[in-house]
Image 1 (tube, one colour):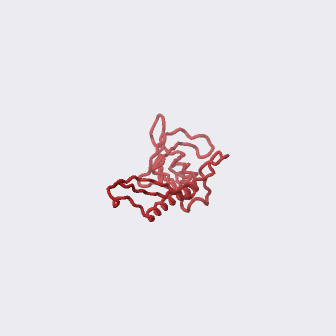
Image 2 (cartoon, one colour):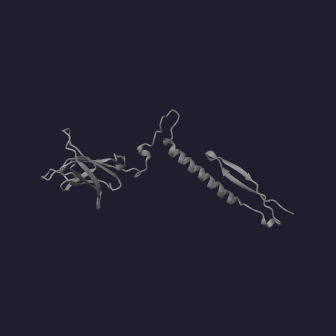
Image 3 (cartoon, one colour):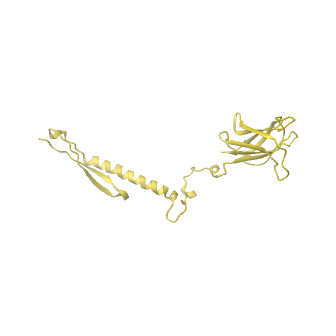
Length: 200
């Protein structure tokens, strides 16, 4: 004689409501000793796991609500400062990530100087037409663009070629070289004023 075992699974629905879902399992066996049995304790464990899953899902939806456009909104409201966990966003993360420096170059004492900049901390003349500019953060993973130009609103400086690279041994530094274009002396390094932009 064959017998059928049964199993009842308790599941949790939305808003924490408990819905009993009956699941019948046809377990055929030659004797009663091999029937599948589920204890009340096992059912309670399954119920609690389901409840915890629903709670976490609801918490995630609540946290994401400010980022989801509501009826009548053209864009999500976004999170306010108090909603951001301490340490989640550092002050530098809120600043303009673009760093720049405007530099005058020359061999005379005091001729090479940082006129203005964002995040730029120092400029050093290594030799004719070769300078290092350092910033207050690592820029070795950023892009550098330099061009010769007047530091103010005077006439543009004579055209010159520029080249850039990272500074070996210093992740915060950029090397800028300025050189003549056209004959005579094309490619010869020259001291001039330049603008440097670092985009991270």
